[in-house]
Image 1: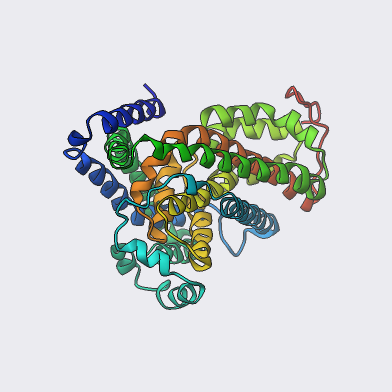
Image 2: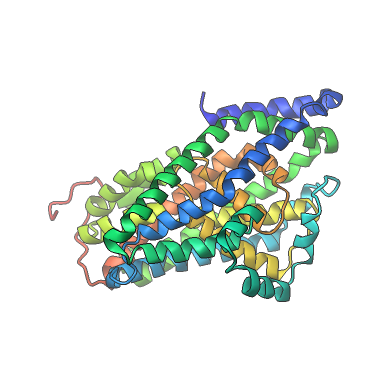
Length: 411
């Protein structure tokens, strides 16, 4: 049985257990705490490994050339726009107001998130971001780990053969960390059952009514970002019509939605872009593999909305400084996210940790995560495909007359 189906079943059983046997839920609450502790255990090492590998995938930062610089600029720009859209809508709609979790214990770290202002944020950024990386890992200082990983990955790309052993180590380390994450995720249904059963027993099933508003907010934000990419960015900077893009890329978008994996969709994305839309092979083969690794617009947007939703549901006020931290960590964590189903769960933990939100809140939104994962993956692939057209135009590369059925006589 698929993991997302197991999670759905666990959610249903947990709600039933919380309603009908709340006195028994007390004895299994520790399982949820163990599951969350396991997630916390991998956050720091996973950030370090994934961000280093992500930066290394760009190639030598000194020699990436114009196409590399333009590609990275596009990816960062659209990710920034996505997170801003997500934060804007979640502040406007306030979906967490309908899910009252204020009675749950969030811990002392929640107070730090409440008191975070712009001045505190800037002071912390200046004094603690560039701290000892080992101390940052031990203390869970997410921004510090990200800063070190960006520097290390960038320098490794300039060392050539001398940096290869270290680069190989981090690639293997990243694979190992993803293996550990895979093991932890196998226990997700059990952890979710314990967490959700406790939430239901404490607050009643009405706590989940607010999820409908949350889902609507996420889908609205994703749709708005996708429409901006297709109907504003594409015709202005790519100089082709959205109709042509949608016709040529329809198979890739459908596959992205059904698999919830931009990595699994990559071969189809490349074929559709090259044959269906007629994008230059040089742009397709450079931009799309890089995009499937580091360009996660939908994921970054989703994690920003999720963090704000949980904060609102717990009655935690996150000021401008805390939202800036969400902006930075959601963007960076999305860059390091694997293009596989469920990868957002781990990167979401990174964002929550950065602003001191209780990880228990993740258990609430896992019930709808699979559907939203499919939606955000589709937006990720839309961003990649629009990017390869935009970069091709900026490089002066020709776009052939693509055929929506996948047959292009010019290639």
